Length: 397
Ligand SMILES: *Cc1c(COP(=O)(O)O)cnc(C)c1O
Image (cartoon, rainbow, N blue to C red; front, top):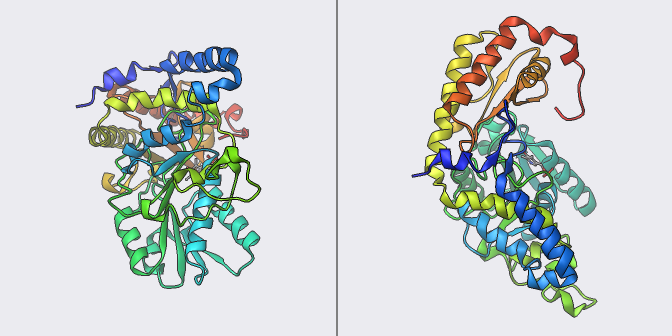
């Protein structure tokens, strides 16, 4: 069993704040400070260049990948860290298209996070081989999988509504049509159980600053199915994905391991903070986490629906079809969220009218949820959303 009081004690949470935005940026693990200090002072400061070997910096992307692997149902040696999720999606898609050269369709859905679609557009433009990006409604994905599709590229849990795709079913459908499946795990990794190996997913990628609490700028991860690793052509053929980077060969030869998905120099300090954050997961049972996340989300929906008739649920009502976040539509959602944040309840806002709340059981409990719903009801009933100070848009919503 997982002791959620113990996990909560491992985070620094500011006084008077109820943090329901760990789906966007997880909070600071207390141990991260000391680990970052060590990396900066003891390793960089004292060891200098020697730290690449002596402090294990060079192996870090693979070592940390192996720690993420069990959280997403991946085998050791199939996950590596680096860059950002946008870049990892690009790499996954480029490798996929090279494995299905006769097919031209990249299939995604209109609920996808825009960066995935933008990266696909950019890749298609650079390839200039007549690929097309086809986006259909999320409910229409299954029916749109046919033998023209090279890559099915989806985000598992919708960033805006929390709607979750059936990874096993859609991956199987893609395979039956001869396509490969790429999954974006931004709102899945650390939020719910994922079984990449069991679903036979071809490629996956995710970020680590959301539910994994790696901090702003923490590197992304990429997964490649073991039998694809030696076939996956690195589109971003950087020197650290080379089979022997320190031979300084003039010709590129990819590593025969997951490390071929590395590109350049890794963000060591940032990844060290992530390593500290991952320690917390050693004592977490993903099934218990999921059960708790559902309890908290259900409680929030019940309380908000009972008290705020002006808000309408924008997430699936069935918890089995939802990730670890809940969204409500409200015409004045942006201003209401600003008013709510001013009262210590931090969620966020997604255009055009969605107020979004994430439930991370590692540091959020029932009392927080009840209190957040209470404060939200006060904001809605009291009309605080009507105050002009909350209406001007900031750059990050
Ligand atoms: C957060 C998020 C991203 C962010 O990509 P970065 O390159 O890390 O900025 C991508 N995809 C989804 C689905 C996300 O939710």
